[in-house]
Length: 631
Image (cartoon, rainbow, N blue to C red; front, side, top):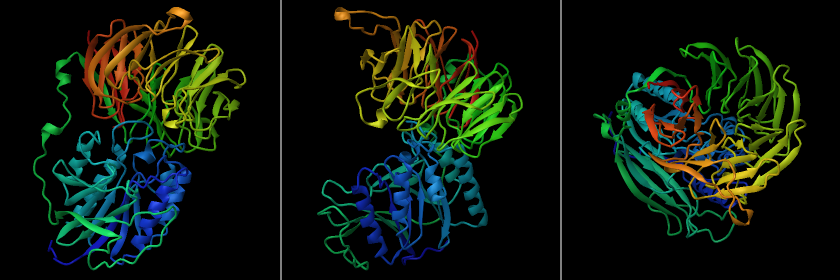
């Protein structure tokens, strides 16, 4: 490729705009940048690299789409973790409004490609879904086959260890091609990283700083790749101030600054051997050789839920929108049912019927043997809640603020509770005569099973929805409900009244809880290396206050952890999932770690224990693994 020492073209990069319906300032900042870009005749297109909104809600996404439509040049947007971690739409509204959550296009003989690198629905490290990696590989292979065009890659997170859990799967693809650099945001400041030998450039947020100045990035392609920070004049008042005309032949006038901060070489890229020392360490599998994989299967899409079994078949949904029935003993695919949009919530199966929800707004009942649709119910929003079946009735929550009770054989809605103020993600719990579940509206609910009427609701004293007890699967014992939430408290409530029995933040628990088979112990995974077991039976102190009594605490050496996967016990073994692909087997009575096994480097969902020595794990990498431990 012949290099030219003249300006080929320039484009603008906007990132981390964080538009919110409750805060007008980010939109003011964005409007100023749009007005400034529109005055620059040298900018030929705009790339937006994630966290366009604060909460990923439809109103905010539509608002920024309308604002970006004011640009006089083409623009291309990819989603960030704030679009993929929270959303009542199952994070599908970004695609519905923008047309896609990724982009690919050619300009001046060069190729530009961007995709999502954030976790889906839950707190986790950044992650690139298997279907996006397949899409990336297909596109870049086509570009390289057609010639040797320079390639520019756009993500939100930097593709490095500690930011994206499967970064190496992505860089293994990129390193095979003429990739000039990766660009993104997330850190809200200008930084240069080396990601597996590839330059990864993070750019400033569009948001104003403490001095009232906001801005964006301008990238000029000449004989080098030149990065400029465009800093706009301080905001003296709310609203969008008039923009002054900039002299683009040189540095701007004093009020608006175009600051050069980085240059990278532009030319043919050939990458040598990767640094293997940075990659995940699987040596733990050699230490515990008694842990074997009965079978291991990879689906086309990521998996964010837990499978269920009827004893012969295994049922699981994926991020592409397919529900699978697999033969339990072999993993062989028996049938698939395609909904067209992601399946996030875990299914339930009973009496030959599989029930689950999809982001396509439907709840389905399928014949467990054949996969034939028996019925479906269309709701007003995506259905992301996990399903529970009790006495022939399925309970499942949707994104439209409703909890449903459905006859699994007829598909008839027995009742629906419509007083929720946000979406449901959890698996509801049936205990005695009530249904218990959390919602992303800050509340835990108890409904009467017979008619769905509200028995009580409880709030942890926090008004922030992101601290809701919404991801945890509640458990019950001895007339009490046990939960944990992002507020890092272990909470015990009276099942009948919702009154607090005890609350403790002695252990930094977060969104995980499990119950022993004898209902005597509750377990939770803490955020730093620790599993805790607490007795469920009451222990009274003075003045009739109830206090929790710890059975055991184990520092299990799994590192920092925020994956909302429940620790589950079966036949004396406590099975524990982590965010970086490590599973643990523990003695449920003593807390002793019995074995470890590393399946991958991404989220392991809540496990499906089959016995004390057999368990099935699914991962966001799209894998299903049947583990058997030899005694």
